[in-house]
Length: 265
Image 1 (cartoon, rainbow, N blue to C red):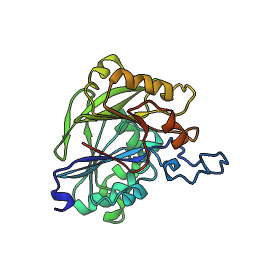
Image 2 (image 1 turned 90 degrees about the vertical axis):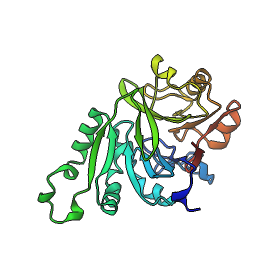
Image 3 (image 1 turned 180 degrees about the horizontal axis):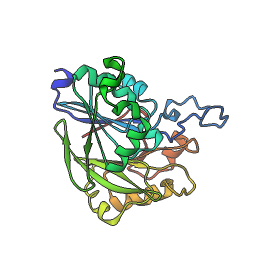
Image 4 (image 1 turned 60 degrees about the vertical axis):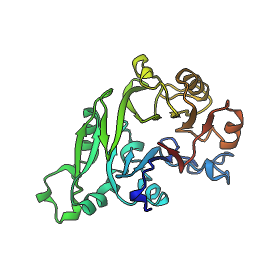
């Protein structure tokens, strides 16, 4: 049976790093110099693969390399948590998929995120007639999403969930009994209700010390204990966190994620 015919759906954690990734350029620390491949962290992103095709959550700067690594074939949509640079700067790598499909790649996001993407990639949303040739204008189309209101992409039902990234409102996403919550410092009470009964939770844990816009390890563990998923993985990890050391310290049912981790949906 071919991949496209398979009934299995999976979430692939393409990147588990912070906005600067791991290793940091020029950093001599133990984690940045580690030979352990699970200490190599590209910028945060997720590939969803199901019976009807593939789509992504967030488009970080290493998107092309991440998709090649995961043997992706045709990305038919992108969903965005928020518009910080490490989550959108791979947007132009979606250009080839619009040409292959001969139709616009849907970009699912909130209004404020659309505004920031349009500003950052202004050339992508100008009148196509102003471009010198067809390959100069990416085929992209915005689709509005609202927290708490489910939508469907390629046969998968997705629930956007309001989170706070410091003072910035951002989104996490629940697909079936799996949730992806990156770049989060607090989860509103009504959002916690939407995160009950999870099989798997992927959640932000930047470092050991508290941070104003991200959960740190202890805070992430406390949040996991509140939400009570069967399994949890920590993501968006800085070079403060060594994979093996952290894995040995965490309670049962909680592990560090790593680039390429596959979760069955």
